[in-house]
Image 1: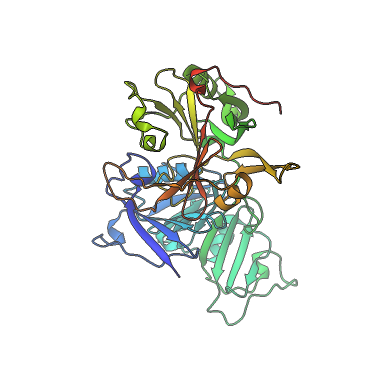
Image 2: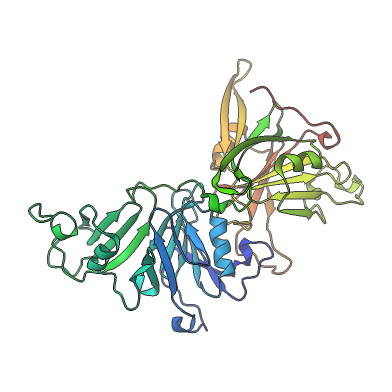
Length: 476
């Protein structure tokens, strides 16, 4: 197994954030299997870390306490924000992902000190499954009554008393595990010490009593998920409690004409409710369009206030433009509006205050900007001409999940070599991640990672468009 373990502060996933001395581990796993145990040097034993977590189990919804909640459907960024805020209580977190095939395996936050794993869907990056794999490290209760603690063992009798009757369990002979399933909740019992597998006897009473299970068998793992089947579960829609006044992008369509991008059409999600009536809260769906040449006021009225405004101090790509020495230095700086929950940056001209560039972020793990932005689920329509004079036109759509080799098949190969981009911060000149490569085609710049996935797409308007009236979307 080839496992690369990079030790870094959580500050790398949120620009400027301090982890307050709490060390986090980023595990880039080529073969996605659990990482080998790793001990932090010069750290006190677990007994000095503080009291054991005492958590409420809510089937098909969450694992929570009075301070925080890990809710199914929660975005990855919010879960990491909870870990950052409570880093003195929840220490030693591993980020596990597949480096070469990040879309084929769940992204996992492993709370090693507390025996908890949070499994996020590889595509939408929302919480799909909560797994408690070591019940000796955490206290658990249901409806306010403990069924697992230092004084109460999670035996099958205790589970029966706390959760009531359910359908007969399922025995997995390969794993030697007995799975007891409720809706949105499963318990796994280790049976390796048993002389024979449990059998279902229809002559006995139905329920747990119908299974020939030795008394005192204890839970090895517990899972919280949506639906009736752990194997078929999917990450649910984002809960209303996770919106926190933010607007999220369900999808972003790039509007184009025959020459290149014109703007963006965004399908937005927000939690709306009547005045003071939280019971009537529901998710609202909005559709908004922004174009190259739109004014800053137009964008603010369309998308609302950004999370951050960033002023460019220098243009590091200027040297790659035609005749850079002839460009007159500007007395003002262009500026970005950063919409982190949309996964979009918008660059405005410092003089005209009109849109001149869009940046769409894919938020793949292993990239320098991972977890600063939510994933932008974009679609870019392309028209590809093949053949000679009697060429045929093929329509294709590039998405957040398209790989660079597939993109080149549709839009052609760049004529020039890529620009190598190696990021580093002013506070720490080391970058734990490898360089990326920037290719320019059809007024788009694709930032490509080492695994052939796209880290970001930068869209440019027609020359001089930042000083002109905005373009209009083509007829759909």
